[in-house]
Length: 191
Ligand SMILES: CC(C)(COP(=O)(O)OP(=O)(O)OC[C@H]1O[C@@H](n2cnc3c(N)ncnc32)[C@H](O)[C@@H]1OP(=O)(O)O)[C@@H](O)C(=O)NCCC(=O)NCCS
Picture 1 (cartoon, rainbow, N blue to C red):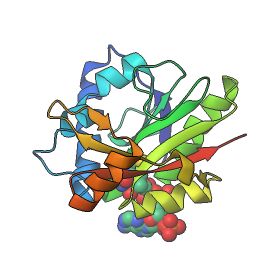
Picture 2 (cartoon, rainbow, N blue to C red):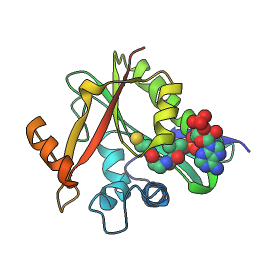
Picture 3 (cartoon, rainbow, N blue to C red):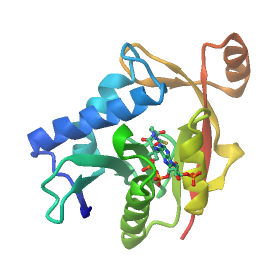
Picture 4 (cartoon, rainbow, N blue to C red):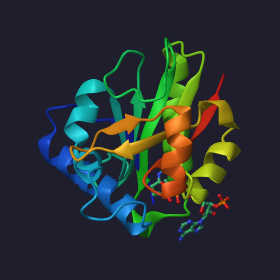
């Protein structure tokens, strides 16, 4: 089946709703978060991603008019959505593929499209974070040439409003032992 990848504008209301739902569903389906998790509203907020970054979607059909099957966000330097990126680094966030479309290379194609866009804008490095349990994503990023960067790992606790609070190394060890924190794994790629 033909598919099209394109960026989505902040004024494409129904598409943004569809992409937000798909992103949350992809994370829920893998048990990465539950319905009550404070990250769910952020996963659903595709409008913010379209506004503050480059929101990419893949949709069915040669003209891209079919259902959304996957999405990724390319965060440019200086965006409010940058979590790990420093200086002029670009960041990839919220890669998500519909649970019924997995294993067809959609995740890889979306990642490649975002990498190509970053390179076309002169990016010298792209970084991203994953949860420890995202084993499919780890293999995918490594296949695409991303390097595992332990020095970029970071630890967070969730705030009730969906934002996260970054912990210092000393606090992180304590919080991880008590199970109240999430350890995120860093990756980077250079053209
Ligand atoms: C990670 C994710 C985007 C991958 O999407 P995808 O389109 O299935 O990715 P690809 O098809 O390019 O590669 C998926 C891998 O799963 C394998 N696979 C095959 N059938 C599969 C199926 N039915 N379901 C899941 N994976 C399958 C593929 O062969 C490939 O395996 P490999 O890594 O061992 O070579 C998707 O699983 C997802 O949305 N996960 C939840 C959110 C997430 O973890 N996001 C990462 C954010 S950092």
